[in-house]
Length: 170
Image (cartoon, rainbow, N blue to C red; front, side):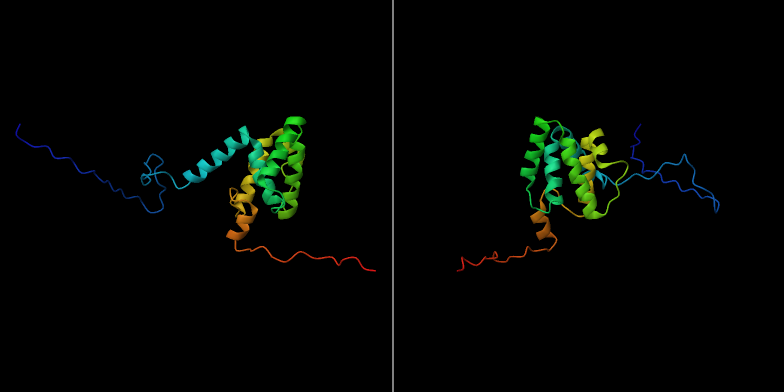
């Protein structure tokens, strides 16, 4: 009774396999290091984008449209116009499919798996998420917008005075 119990050290078992033998399918895989997996941040971001796109597609559309338009329209303006078209006509998929076609033309993408308008008509949120992921894969931070992305990438906008037309001549 007087024997003290010591915690046992974890036993490590090494097995030797014959040369060329495949590992046993029953063998346990080594545990990954503690903490979240490396792709959990990307997975969380993707899930967030899907949820936002499902509940309020005008936000995702606005972000995509600003990048595709190269900053000529803001995210807010594009998103508000998308929401207005959606609420008044219900044909928002037609509006967004034009941006998909514009993005395909800019980046040389193929029209797959079917025509742009069919993709947007059948599953608008999926099509918007796909466009969002494509732009993100090309190095854009969708939360920054066009101008901040250009600054981040080292492109500075050209600053020139506006062209002045000559006044009235006789």
